[in-house]
Length: 159
Length: 126
Image (tube, rainbow over all chains, first blue to last red; front, side, top):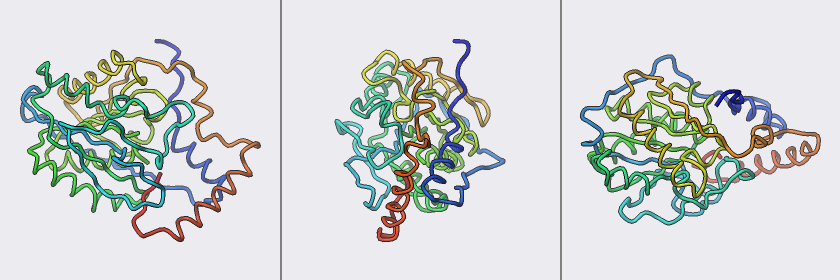
């Protein structure tokens, strides 16, 4: 437990990596002084939870257009995809859905009464260098779909 | 970019009245952005819910995230998962720039710029 290594500094690592590719201007990562916070309105055991992932429901290609997507939590796909995303493809893999899309565990949590229910849909959010696109285009869609599904709380799992 | 995206989405959900928790592995990106609740698994990017096929570990991590969601009382709440990946070699190797790969990275950059120039308008980041 002691002597834990320092967490990887991904912003610095990414800056060096893309500088080596000839991208001279470093990316400006999102940063805010204030952080919104909403307490739970009711116990988790009575709340409906939405699962939100950055993985995709199909083997999306780097040149494919991306959009907010959805799927059924009652009949979730056996596989989800992230070949077009940056994650550590040398160290690991996405062959086990539950290592990044914990639908089996969330169902168990419902069965055990830890969560009230799962929302009928899970949501896939597209990654974008454009923070404006995420905030102004994609987030309102996700919020709207969460409201349609009477979602109380959300678990977000990035790759 | 996955971690920044979910951080931004979580902030918007929270502002709209929906409490959130992020379960992820890029600590610096999430904390730089600032989010309500973050559970940090110090693993290679890709498996924030636990090692592949390790159901007990995954259950432990996912329920820790659920507890953080229920119990946090203020924004920027962070909970660290105690598990460690089998090795630490990934820490230095991920996106590493070396003399051995510098030329291939330059080529890759040229290809990326050419791809972007010809891509349809809404193409995301990696």
